[in-house]
Every structure is written in C-alpha cells, then in structure tokens.
Length: 498
Ligand code: BES
Ligand code: MN
Ligand code: ZN
Image 1 (cartoon, rainbow, N blue to C red):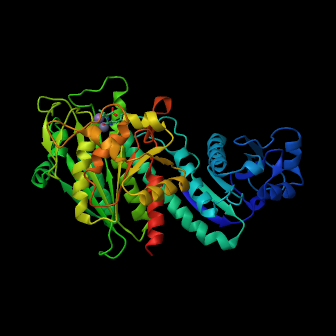
Image 2 (spheres, rainbow, N blue to C red; image 1 turned 45 degrees about the horizontal axis):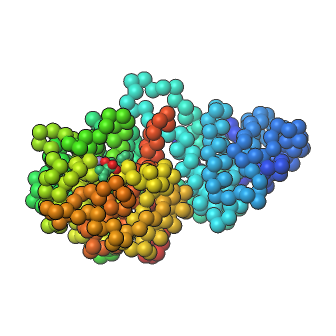
Image 3 (cartoon, rainbow, N blue to C red; image 1 turned 135 degrees about the vertical axis):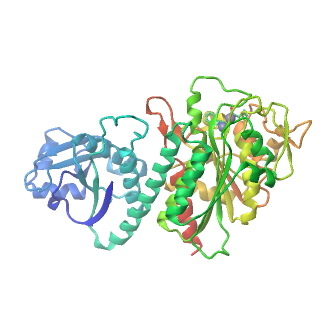
C-alpha cells in the first residue's frame, strides 16, 4: 500500500474516491462543506432526503457528484460532534476502509485528520489511519495453493490536509505509522504461520534476515551454547522436542554505544502442547500462537529500525517447542536455572516462565535501562482481562505507568496487576528454591512473581498478552499486538533521551 500526505482541497481531487465526514443530525465537517459548495448544495440535498443522518460508522457512497472531480464521494458518519473522541475516530476510520474495500476503488483521498479529537493531534490521527488501512488490507495467503479472491484493490491512500504548516509533522507521523503497521504485519505473519514451518530454527532465520536488511547485530545460540551458559531451565523445556531450541539476540544501535539499551524479551514457544502435563485437544492448534511474544518483539525491532529511532535496543527471544516425549521433563523434576536458583517443575505446561527466566538472567549483561518481557503466559490473564487489555506487572511503578500511557496513546491498551509480596509464598516448594506454579488463584500474578525472582538487577515489566495476541473463531488470526504499545513506548523514550 502506498501512502502520502498532500495539502489539497477535496473538490479538486481526481481519482476513485474522496472521503469526508458528516456529524449526526446532518452536520457537515469542514471538508464536506467544501464539497457541498462546489456541487451547489448536492450533499445537503442528499442528506435532507434522509439517505444519511451521520450516525457513527454509517457510510454512504455517492457517484458522479457534480462540480467534483473524483469519481466517488464517501460520506463517513461521525456520530454526535460533542461525543466525537479517539475511540470514535478509530471505529469510524475502520468503517471507512471496510466500505472503501467494497467500492472497488484503487485509490482514495481521505479528509479526516482535520476533525478535532480531544488530546490527539494530527500525528496521532495520521498514524491511526495508516495502521487501520494496513490492517484492513492484511491477508494471509502464503499457505494456500491458489490465492482466494483477493480483496486488496485499494492500493493508494492520500491523506488530504488543508494546512501547509502541518505537512512535515504529518509526513513524519505517516512514516512512523507505516513502520508500526509493517512491524504488526511481520508479527502477524509469524504468528499465523503453521507450527511445522515456524519452528525455533525458522525464527532464528527471520532474525538473521532482519539483521542483514537493517544492519543489526545478531547472535543465535545453540543448545550446546545454552548448556555452557547454564540455562538448565530453558533447556528442560526443549528436551522433549526434536526441534532444536535457539536463543536469538538482536542488537540495534541508534545512539552512542555507551548509552544503556532497553531490552525486550519475547516468549518464543513455537508450539505448546503442555508437554507431559498435556493440554486438552480442543483448540490446541491455537498454541501455534505461543510465540506471539517473540513475534511482537521482532516486529517492534523492525519498526524501530525503520524509524531509525535514536535509542539502543536489544531483543532476546528464547525459542523452543514444548512437547511430550520419552525425553521430556516430568512433573517433579528439579532443574537449575542460569541464575543458580533451583526450580521444581510441578506442571510442564507452565513452560513460558521456564524459558523466560533464563533469558531474563541473560539480559543482565546488557546493563539495561529497562527490561520488558512479552509473553502469552497465562490462561488466567484471558479470564481477568478478556481480549481487550494486555496485563502489565512491574517491579517499577514508573515504568508500568510509561507503558500504560504508551498503550493508551497507541490504542493498544494494557492494565496493571499488583506484584505484592503476599503472592510470592504461593510458589513455595518443599524440594527446590521455588515451584513453577502457584495454583489456580491469581495465576497471572504468580507467574509474574516467578519471573520477578530473576529480574532483581534492573527495572522490569512483564506484559501478559495471552488474551490480546490473537483472535479465535471465524476471525482466527494474529492481531500484531502489542507492537503499537511497544513502538509508542520506544518513540517516547527516544524523545526523552535526546
Ligand atoms: N501458553 C499457555 C498460556 C495460554 C493458554 C495462553 C491459553 C493463551 C491461551 C501457557 O504456557 C500455559 O499453559 N499456562 C498455564 C499455566 C498453568 C499450568 C499454571 C495456564 O495458563 O493454564
Ligand atoms: Mn503451557
Ligand atoms: Zn505456553
């Protein structure tokens, strides 16, 4: 998809379609007024016939409007002007692209960025339009022998603005929006791929390709290397699988080398059967998405490299399958993590924390400014927050606030849960330093408590994306979350450090 920004007026646009907004009770937005004037009141006449009232998400396509060069005018209902807010902007924009897709237009000029949205300027609106357009065009056809009747004909989007002074800022927002949208597409592709294709080896190859393209430093550690590092916990998950585990490390330098990096750690379980604590069969295919944390940190790395942000960033992906076999870890096994702490594995299905803990210990060597891990860690998080918010748990309230705020701004929201000491005792083991599960109660928090025992050396936050990384049912597919949240956080950090 090709995007551009142009200082222009709607009636002069030749092309397949021009999009302008209508508020409820037939109130015209500024861009709609311009069209109405050029067409001698055509728009007002249509509205007073009762064809459209301007209710949010309603759309109406007009053809061959007199006095206007574009083939079509798409009127986008905005709802009541007093109630228009960021959420409405998102749902309206989504409705616009769904309608555009049906019209057969291959290009469109959109006049929505001048509609006022409280607390959100042209930057935000531009970014969101780019993201929503890209998401609506997204298809995953790689594994079909013949592509299905493919929908994207819409290939060129122009964002019409009326103020020359906003051109530069809008262009930059467009670039950033595009980088984030591309990062999301990468994350979606990796998530949606079949688990016989997207193995730890495949993830490592993707990281190497990205490193080559964007001049990043990449290291891929093999099982023998991890053994040398003492990553007994990570390797205990991998030992049941015929696919070799990999520890992938990518380094991006956008600042002086001496500046401390931010480290992102992504859970890369390319398939989670549960191991000997085998999961039930229904929907088990969805455990191909158990590498969504890895996919999202790789997508974020790509976005940061494309934006050329002035920060230092490290991405660490522990990648493995979790399989049952004669060699697999058994409930009751005790393993020693890289930190030296011992773990009694009471449930082999709580494997995410077992691979993350060693990756988190490894992260210490980067002397990080902050470490954020991203993981489809607990079913309990889906019960707590549903498919709306990502769970955040942190040992540093300021970091948690920054992430919550970034999620709010990026329309990729999260919600904080407590990391109080009261929960720690649930991980007690009679035989090792800790157990790998804490029982059914507060499952998301006890999982984070487990991780917190490996993150004492730095500021750390954990994002549980079990409910937000993919959709089930008819719309089954990866969401690309939380690439927007992480990218926004890093954009804000890059502004702070410069
Ligand atoms: N990958 C799963 C978590 C998960 C389950 C995410 C369903 C999304 C949907 C994770 O490895 C897991 O199995 N967690 C267990 C932990 C339990 C054994 C303490 C869970 O949540 O049931
Ligand atoms: Mn599991
Ligand atoms: Zn898992």
